[in-house]
Image (cartoon, rainbow, N blue to C red; front, side, top):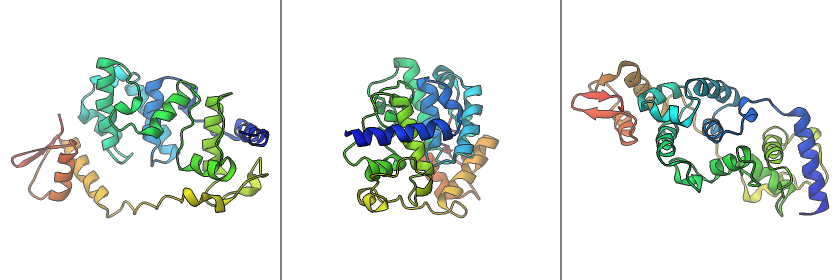
Length: 253
């Protein structure tokens, strides 16, 4: 890392200190709380994730509390965030942690990939591990192609690089707001990190069909199979989100 890249990182962190969004999980270094926040934040708007996280943490403030809940309760609480397998994996992971402790590496927990593991390491344990989502990869490609050293202040540097990529160094960058324009390769440098393909609209999708069936089962405890979307029901059952027994669709536990 060069003196120039040191200066660019310092400018980005300084920008973040002044312009950062306030989100509640930045006030904690609890591994469980950060884990929940990162899983919730994937493909979810920030405002929705904040509301969901605050409600979740009030209900299940510790990993042991989540482990003691039923999967049906957890899935019902998750409604509105989408991708209920994330809730299933959080619940399963909480039971593993409550029985055997936090594993190393964290990727041994269900549903925890390299990004979430790195985010927990950086934002909960303050280790010099940079979580690399699409926004951070874009910033690295444009500004730090040889890498960036965050060891001096991992937590602030990781937060700053991520939010800078979300709000300024976007796919269509707001260059007029950039605190460190010198040396940027711009969008032409993104060749190895192309933008993610936009997800298909939710209305009318198979995801919506699954969500409708799951919501109905969770609300009533069971639904008759007759007249219920069979393809969506079968998919939910394969994921362990509902049970199919005889003529009924049942909650998972």
